[in-house]
Image 1 (spheres, rainbow, N blue to C red):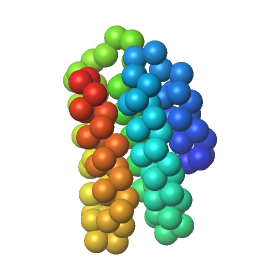
Image 2 (image 1 turned 90 degrees about the horizontal axis):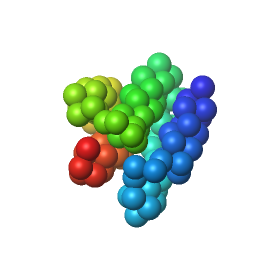
Image 3 (image 1 turned 135 degrees about the horizontal axis):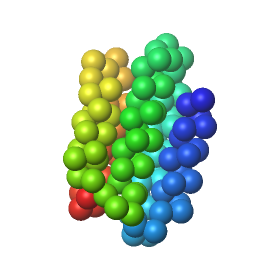
Image 4 (image 1 turned 90 degrees about the vertical axis):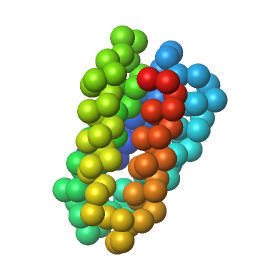
Length: 110
């Protein structure tokens, strides 16, 4: 389930007409780091890993829509950021990677 969602995120980014090629490449690189960190987290915190992945999928969906809603995008990114709270000590790399993903989506001017 988690890997399916991550694959959907990857496909959505690759097929997006609204994301510049350079941004796609950077987001796909970050997504590979997300995959690694989510796999590590899912070994001990399956439900939290699923939640983070769902919010990542939702954030990507909102960021790549043709008709964007800044309100929905902001809510999805806030949910993604909130979903990693509490893992700063046990999984600092996960938090860092998710923050990088959120920041990159936000800085694309959405």
